[in-house]
Length: 67
Image (cartoon, rainbow, N blue to C red; front, top):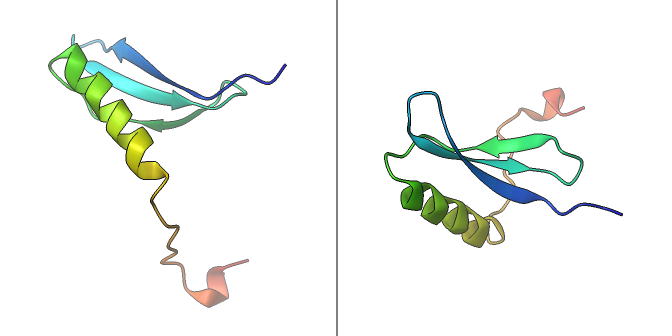
């Protein structure tokens, strides 16, 4: 059974809230900045989820370095 990727909201050591995007294999693939309120971290995760589908992939690596 393949697991779905997920946003995990957690409280950091400073008592602030963050999200981590975890791939289906359990590997973290992205993380947020810290937020003072839980709901702000939740809102940020939903916003990233919404806009990621619209994002394009752009490389700023020179052609000779693209191997």
